[in-house]
Image 1 (cartoon, one colour):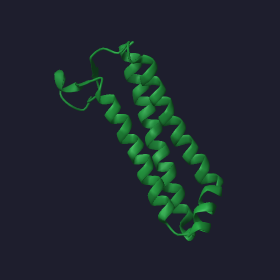
Image 2 (cartoon, one colour):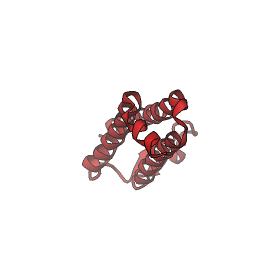
Image 3 (cartoon, one colour):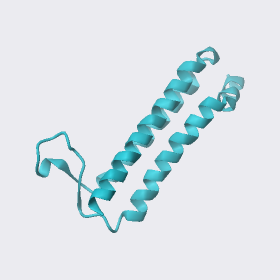
Image 4 (cartoon, helix red, strand yellow):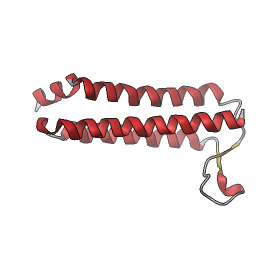
Length: 117
């Protein structure tokens, strides 16, 4: 088991996906921290809902959104680590899936911040 965990982090495809996902999440965290004082009390977020107040969230909810995406990343990492060594393709799918989710969130966050500022 310990040998599988060591080889898990030695796989370049997995470590590059993990680094990309963590980097995107840290970028989002940094963007929120740097722009926190410039953000209005309510932000547009739920574009799929009808026009009006239902689109808006409190800016404090961005912390929960960031936490949720960190949770997705951690969950995918734990699931990928529990898979046996023969399931390298599935492990890389889980890690890169988390990276894609983080990148999509980063793009949405940049759009929201640029819309406001």
